[in-house]
Length: 277
Image (cartoon, rainbow, N blue to C red; front, side, top):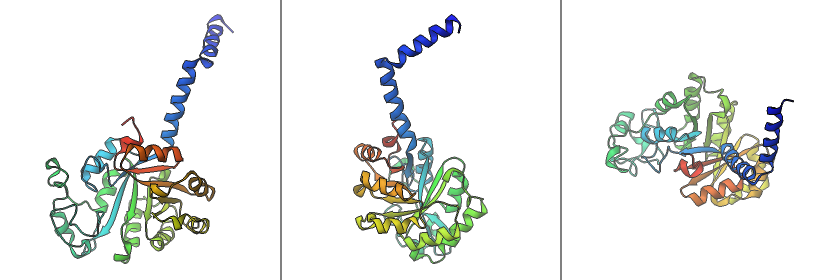
């Protein structure tokens, strides 16, 4: 070993046992832990732009979210659209149920100005538009919203994904979830290679027998953060599932879920989960 190597080794050893190294190690561990948690932009980065619009999804991508979360429903004339509520009343300048309005009628609505003048003219996106715009840029967490209102929507979603070769996603970059468990059983049959998630805010669904039943077809158990505990996380992991929790709208909630050891955090504010943003 030459002198430079010996000196280098000595310096490295002194660093290894120094307080400075210990601080660096602690910071690295924290950063590493954060990077293990998927940061999911809930309906896009909804804290900063109108939910379920291109503006919100673009913001989520800009903030380096691992996934954008979208809600899928169907228009009167059979087009899959991205909107959360079963009516347009809250998030647009229109009124009525999604299922009673044609795609053309839905597209004529202003889905952005309620959030701020700068978002005037934002449209309700189609499902195909979202897939084509964001695949390869970020993961997409697809929620089937009230699928019981739209018979056959599972087959439609499966067809859209299959046409784009997204039925075999790399690194789980497509995930499908719903509060409707029967719908998710169906999706698991239609798309066996796509991860499936079940959504709940009920403590009853955290019982061991319920979790075991979910694990037969679901890859993710996705509860509201109010029912998350370290014991629940351990039990979910023990059954071979991951756990994603929602909806984070405060730094305290994000910090709590990070402490609990969840796999993903669904948030209106991606920067609460990852302070690098």
